[in-house]
Amino acid sequence: MRIQRNTLVLVLVLAVGTHAASAKKATPATTVDLGTAGQFGLLAGSGVTNASAATTIKGDVGSSPTPTITGLTASQVNGTLYTTSSPVTSGAQSDLTIAYNEAAGEACGTDLTGTDLGGLTLVPGTYCFSSSASLTGTLTLDAQGDRNAQFVFQIGSTLITATNSTVVLTNGAFNCNVFWQVGSSATIQTNNVFIGNILALTSITLDGGTLNGKALARNGAVTIAAQETVNASPCSCSIMVSSPTAGTVTQIPLPYADNWTETTIATGLTSVESLACGKNRLLYAGQSGVYGGPMQIVSLDQNGMNQTTVVGFSSFQGLAEGGGPEGLSFSTKGSILVFSTTQADGLSNSGVWHTSILSPDPIQSILPFSPNGSSNGGGGTAFLTAGPFAGDLVAVDEANSMIIRDAPPFTTARAGTVFITALLTSPVGIAVNAAGNIFVSNTDGTIQQYATDGTWVGLFATTGLHNMNIAFAGLDLVVATQDGPVIQIAPNGTQTTIGEVVGGDGITFCKE
Image 1 (cartoon, rainbow, N blue to C red):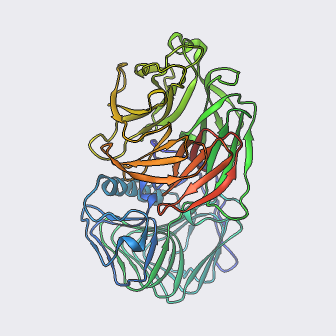
Image 2 (cartoon, rainbow, N blue to C red; image 1 turned 45 degrees about the vertical axis):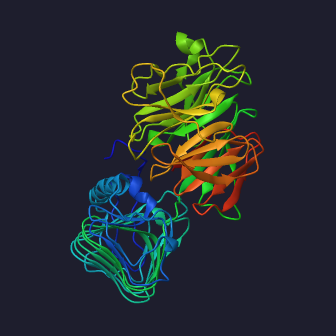
Image 3 (tube, one colour; image 1 turned 180 degrees about the vertical axis):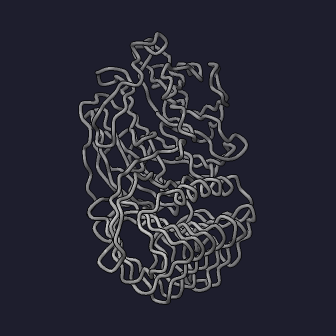
């Protein structure tokens, strides 16, 4: 079981539809987690080849250790196209290996060896084939109303579909929760509408059709032989947004649809300015005390229940002397929770602290930012994922309109290094995408983009609203605004309002 990412333990009762073999009760299963490989529509080990100029991919595309990309241009990819070696693609391959082993390690609930998947209706569970698997016709996956339902197919050798074959999802099933673990290679034939994440040990061939999911090959190539549409949009996820004035946390489900619904999952969290999702589906909320109430960090489940105090500021002298928490974020391995502190009551203890979930005593990482009148102190925090400073902590110094950087292990309080000052106006939020690019939100409505080394890239977007904190949901950047609208911004700059949280401030992306 993976211990460095969110895990959700499900007890799945396995049964096969009327056209399949009898089922057995499954042992408890762990949700397969793609990690950073989940950002990719196509990921290969020895190169990606595309034969059609009409092919479109939603999701990143790359290959590692052989980075060759043939016949695919950036205009065909709604995401990042990695044409050279990158820590992002090598890291995604490492995560793919973990996910592949997770899927392969599930206990077999139903043995379908020798059975064609065409014509079957299957409910959540783990299905195994000792050698090859085939699909001729239509396979229906029925989640039985459980949006977290997981389907795992363990295939000993090859997966081959027939022309015009289809996978259909019903009763709440999501493509992100369907996993095809293939012991050698997968071939998806012409005019297929195939669904799920293909995790192949060797290669994957797409012969022209639609893949609602991901083609992820560990060692071999991904080959597109004819026009293909790959939609690797995130699913079964949520955006959480806090309102410090209302003391609420609102959940907005993804992927966004025109009939979106938002749900207030927590109330009574006075001054809740910051949010972060951690392990075991826990949500962490920082209460700054700006609008009254305690200064503390609490954890709660994603239904807003079982609130537990993680750090009470009144219990620690250094924290009690300053303002409350802001800008919660987790390290890339999820073991360290970082937060900045605001400036309150004329005090200026607005530096950056961190705590471990296993050992919650907070440690100061960055000394207080220089006072600047009555301006607010610390803002958002994040970790750099690529480039010359990968692994470093970055934090918004709101009072002085700059970004401060600090290197691990963060155990000694120090001033930190001034990292970004160029063209910042009124910074408050910060987020880093999978490629390591840095995005900073300003309350004047602008969002600016910087390279992995902190150099200016350009103006990414203007919302026309009072931007607060920001977070990445897959490839899309999501912005909380004081005005209320929650804005989702695609890589091409297209903006969509996906929710309304009056006085929106903290924001985080949660897997369910």
